[in-house]
Length: 350
Image 1: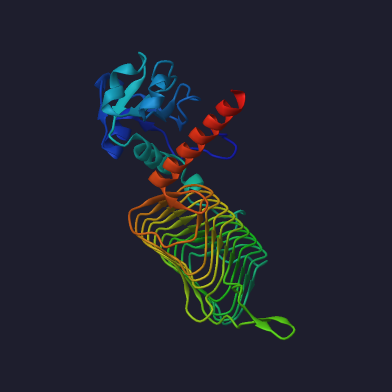
Image 2: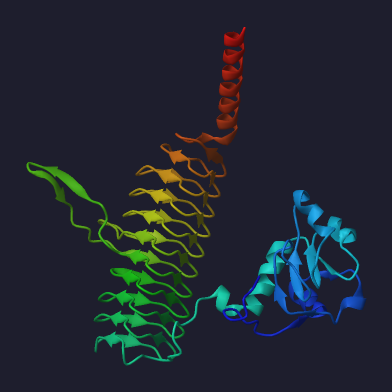
């Protein structure tokens, strides 16, 4: 449930307004003027809340629903209790998220930690840096020589942006973030503690042990990317490390040097992407996926959590396991092992 201390709705919406904004069909127009004051999960709803229910396994949530209104697919519409406005939508979760972003914009896009506007006197800005009017640089931030910061971008306390980096407009650089050797697009969100542009892990064997290979590439982060807290993105060795537009990366992810990530990818927490890996567009990696170096993962591939990739994956496939393999083969193999162990136990018991 929302806490009014931290998240205050920008305004209240009527059910009719929500229907118009989301393209939903209101089942009973008598509820048109019902007010939506907050959002909630279907299990935690209350008076004044907008909730959503989708998926056949969740249909039971409709019966005891407490809410002002519910977004649901057509086949759920007649299951809602009396007094709850029903908004029919083919994609309830997406519609719900849209309303949430409108009601709680500060929860959707990070805002400044302090009440300061413009450049704080407590920030260090090199004289050769260019900060566009409308950017916010908070106390403790360090902006190096030749850096450019676009209007509408917030640089939070104690963030450090190194020499000649360029940060686009309407973005967010969280507290304690460090950025170096990087070009960052518009509307990019980089959450607290992330590290962008440090050395890649490049060494060559020498007479006295590993010797460093200079890493002289950059990090290119395209528009509308989001990078989670404490995630690391190494700069390229000779080429660039590239993160494609619209890609969303969770917390605690390692992106190694020369990795090229396509557009619209989803990368969950604890993933490790080794050097020179290429991910196509709209790839989805579950939590703790590990990818060996120099592999290519095709467009729209889905990889299950904790999988370990050791081979290239063609476009459109779904893989699982360690080492990873096509999902149908993984489950067939798992079933065979289970059957074998059952028979083995039966033989011993006999």
